Amino acid sequence: MNRKLGLIMTVLMGLVLTACASNEKQVVETESTKPVVVDTANVDRNAYGSGYSVSDLASQFGIDGDPLNYKVLYFKYNSSAIDERSRIIATRHAQYLGEKGGLRVNLEGHADERGTRDFNLALGERRAQTVAQLMNTAGASSAIETISYGEERPVNVAHTETAWKANRRVGIKY
Amino acid sequence: MNNLQSFRRLLVSASLLLASLVSLPSYAQVELNISGAEVRGIPIAIVPFKVLDGSVLEHQINEVIAFDLVASGKFEPIAAQNYLSNPSRNEEVQWKDWRFIDAEVLVIGEVWTLGPDQYEVQFQMYDIAREQRIGNGKRISGLSMRDLRTAAHVISDNVYQAFTGGAGAFQSRMAYISRTEVEYQRYRYRLMVSDWDGFGAREVYASWNPLLSPDWSPDGQKLAFVGFNNKGSIVKVVDLTTFVDQTIAEFKGVNSAPAWSPDGSKIAYSSSQHGSPDIFIYDVLSRQHTRISSHYGIDTEPSWSPRGDSFLFTSSRTGKPQIYSYSINDESLSRMTFEGDESANASYNSDGSKILMVHEGGQITVMDEETSRLTMLTNAKFDESPSFSPNGDMVLYKTEQQYEPALMVASADGRVRTRLSLVSGDVREPAWSPLRK
Image 1 (cartoon, rainbow over the protein chains, first blue to last red):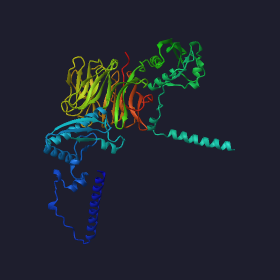
Image 2: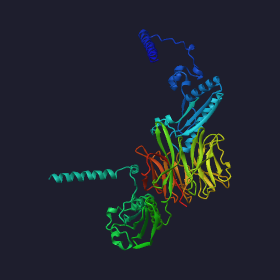
Image 3: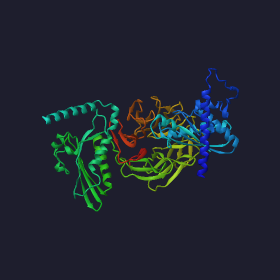
């Protein structure tokens, strides 16, 4: 089993290396000042139904590939408003769920440590509810449950902006 | 020569130290156990109690009394090494010994061993300025070794009453939540009850899910608190004598922030069973739930007025959390806080003249009910869960010191802050009990 895995890894690495090598070759060949013509007609401006191209998803929102691979949405302080990144991810999940049909979905809302614990319980729920609403509107057609842990289950316990940012979240679970 | 040089060096470093102390910014006072100095407490001498058979006590009565009285902000104990005599009986008291060290109050006493683990404590109080004994001295009997701390708290209450005219709160208790990591990322949450100073903590409820927001019944017999089932947060009540617990609110959504009414007949709480968190009132006898508020904003953290005819609560109806008051009788609403971005988790003191709250997300603040004037008790950013002592003279809250959670007591004027170092570990959500009945 392990040997098989090793073999696969070697093949994969080989592929990666050739990919790199061919990229280098291209760089060497492009010596003319003539602009490279890119066939814009063929670029998918609506990758994964997001309304953005794959490269825009990566550069603007840090979403590499299918937004379905992202399961945590982040929020501003004291806010349950959904930003564009969260909208893209939640909508993609809703589409997927709509296609699959009948899955149970759990949305887990959280808050950062600032503010009082009881208020943060409410805030975490509000965030989860906002995501649930969006996913329902986007055709999730699934049983979506929300639960809030407020500030009780942080992913990062530091008292820093970075930690707070990571903790203000809704996790999509199904 | 050499000696002189080193003496000079010492002088220089001493004055440097002094200079650095003087130039300390005011927030550095948080680092000290006791801070502030404009108004002084009453200078008090508490003589180490004489133990008649010479047995060794686990706790020094004079030290427990001193700790109590310092925390109130109304007394300033004089260190025992400055005493010129150590009287334990009335006839041994020399007025001049105490005037010399500027003591205004003197407390003396004795501990008698009456049998195996059976003690009696006697004490006397003196007004040094008037050269008067207060009362005739008192005896507290039927004590075990463990009760000696309770006896000390009784003496503290007597001193407090005699020299401030108000009721002491040193026989009260506190509840708090303790969290321990049993295995990697697996936590045990325990609801604890201890003496007001953190001594004698015992578990009254435990869970693998988060616990928060404990609130005492007015008779001190029960605690309402928030726990979790697999669907979300629920409101529970535990009896402190039988340890039997019951769930009083487990509706869809968030159920949280329980608050007993002053007569104990109702528990106000927040529930989002209709989608958005609203205030509900649970009637203990009939077990009926009545919805009180119905705004789309977050309404939570209800807390009753001393008369029980209104309650304060936190609402985000204007965007950010602020304090509102709801009157039960005329069903009217008034906004209480306007200063700053955020105010939350408010509660009244025993006579309703002051409102305690968390300001700007983590600063413990007292607001005068009439003038709305704010007094900041702390300067930190992450302080939380404040509650008044039953006599309103002190405030218990949770802070963090050197990245460690700590329970603190501040005098209500903000002058003195005392750490309750008997409680350690990952502790949070302290709540001060009513007076023992």
